Length: 134
Image (cartoon, rainbow, N blue to C red; front, top):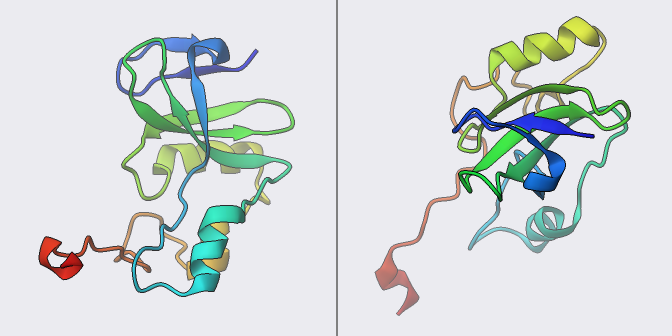
């Protein structure tokens, strides 16, 4: 049984109390993006065998969304953290690397960013002004 600890209310909940929300840390593409970028956002997922970052909702608890790092093969949970995080916290990265020294984060492949959480968003998605829809 998969047990995740909600980072908001601190409850260790079984997966039956949670609702999965798919892959975490997706770059969302809005107006002005290419068709290829939008198609990638809608349909392409990593689905790795091994370390994976996912969105979860504490459905029968506080109701908030959070992110979890876990192994899809062994169900080992490396940690959970708030949904507003652009990258996993350093302590979760350290826990993954301690158990899997050869693991490379997927954002290194995409952005070359080896220091999560440092720098600007490589693909900002600003909300258009209300007047631009007229």
